[in-house]
Length: 200
Image 1 (spheres, one colour):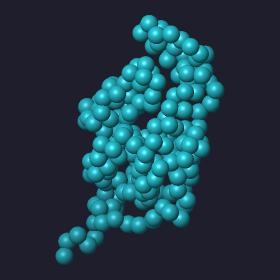
Image 2 (tube, one colour):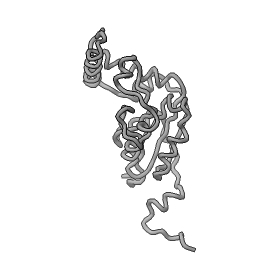
Image 3 (cartoon, rainbow, N blue to C red):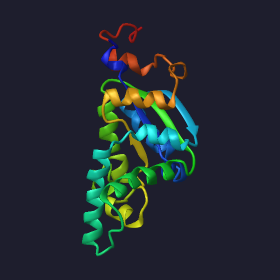
Image 4 (cartoon, rainbow, N blue to C red):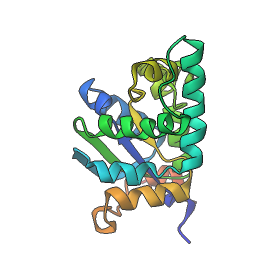
């Protein structure tokens, strides 16, 4: 079993983050905590890659679709299809968005990497994300607005929500050989049990 300091998570800066020139700002938030980037690639994803990445089932499509139907009814908009189809559209819209331009895929490593990145990124909906998070500070979209407009929520970034999900997602975007194992100088201060060698 790997040492806890070697926990990995997966992050994608979505097309809106790239187009709004937030690469440096977002990466710096991860680096300031002591997390380490071990793989990075700028690419335009393939549709099949995105469908595999999002990995949703019929129950998820139905639940999300029911929420969209309710929002449309509350906004006096017509309900033109079954709830499950609206749910499928969420991923379809995400795939359209994710394949619209370059994204930056990353593997990030460190103690509790999944939890730390999730905390820094904030809730999925920018409108309700906490101030101080990436989504709360840098964008303002909402589920309702995206649903009414029939598009993906523009929330800048995807991050894994569990370590096992991170490992599944990493395999979709990187081979193990592309992930670099290295030691950074800051890891001595973060993780070494004794700090031999600091004083001369």
